[in-house]
Amino acid sequence: MPGLTAPRAARKIARECPAIRVRQASRALTRVYDDALRPVGLQMSQFSVLIAIAAFTEADATISAVAGSLLMDRTTLTRNLRPLERAGLVRLTRAPGDARARLVVLTHRGEKTIELAYPLWEEALGRVRRLLGVRKLRTLNVQLSFVIASAPGFEELTRPSAR
Image (cartoon, rainbow, N blue to C red):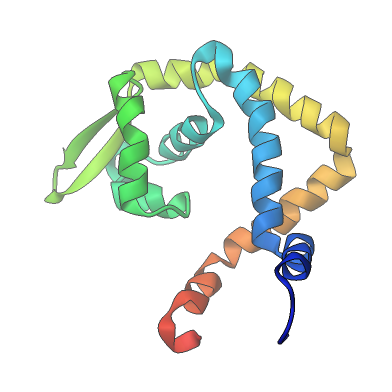
């Protein structure tokens, strides 16, 4: 739109940009879960990494596989693993069959932390459910699952040939 002023463009973008809206919603939800998880010393960003690792078998939890499940690049995951490793919640090891591949292993302390965090997470989920309502929360999860499942398509959009 030629001649569109910055304030008009900003209002349109703020109203219509799904990336901005999802980031705002994520920050709002993250606050609820961060507050809930504080007693176990975790933030939601760390908890989501622990949950992703716990979903893998030890032999399959490569940095690449865990990063892929989180829709995160490997370097970001590696950076996010450092405080979890320092806290003794995860351990990084070499894959037995491939010295180049690194595995992320949930320690016993990491498992216990998830177990302690679970009721706190449930309480936060209950607060979100009460605020949004069961139907809206279910709809939100379905819509977000669709976006997540569409992630490979978004990768296509970022390639120079797709522009």
